[in-house]
Length: 386
Image (cartoon, one colour):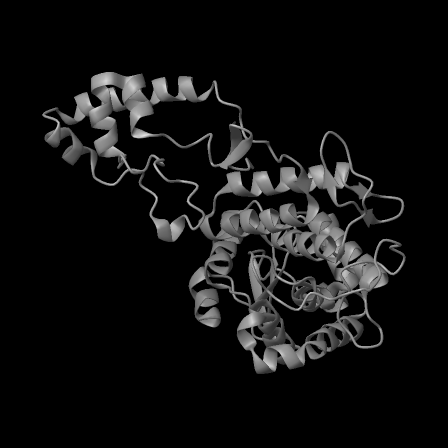
């Protein structure tokens, strides 16, 4: 991520200076071709950033190149064909980039933060499921492997906060554990690779150990042993990033069936939601992610169990139906191999009774500890989930 404030103007740094242009600068660089570029990218003498978006007057007389009309219109106004206009604009932009390369670049913030990458893993995994795009799943797996290799102490089960030219010495905060566990659960559902689910469970248990508030419920942002913290606080706002407690409550509900302590996980999720009752009951819009967890606590997820050969077309057919129709109120249990299925059945013994019908991939839809008759066709499964 590049921070967009860069070069010095006199002795003062100017906001966005690396990316901004005056009309005179463009005309000096491009000559006659400047007219086409200025028209196409809304370059103005007084600058194209209005005062309502520039309260400190830092962009006065400066322009952000932004396309405001179709290429065909710009070409017509300049008496050119579309192909001619396109070629001239590409050449002009190349020349401007060459000039811009001589400016001091903004500082590059290239640290890797565990929590943010947990959110990225979740987004990639969900995209892979819904869009059936393996490239997104591959990117999520690559990210998870990096964090496991570089930001996770296997012996202690502890996460570290960030990485830049090596791992930092700062251990993870509550959001690092919550967001990464959330991403790993989504990654499991996208790949059916049980190792991600096992790691998510391990992270949740460590989060409970380090951040759980036994007295009131919910999760502190920092550990009890952090000498730099005078007062341990809890985040109570789902803003650009959700609060750790909001995400953890949902994680607890999703992990409960395979936790080996289902009632304990559900109780901790319930206590987490209850700890923030004053906030979500009076101003619900400040904790939308917490309300999703509340819904899951009040109405447990429909559980979908899928058994069969993950490489077989009939299994993929059922999985596609699940991925396209199952929402946040559904929980998927399946495994990419026999070893993974054995682990799941060991954690949730009721899964052991699920078997393929007539050798075909089979789906079981269960709710409130009761399963409907198994189905082996995509149409019948779709009807059950509708």
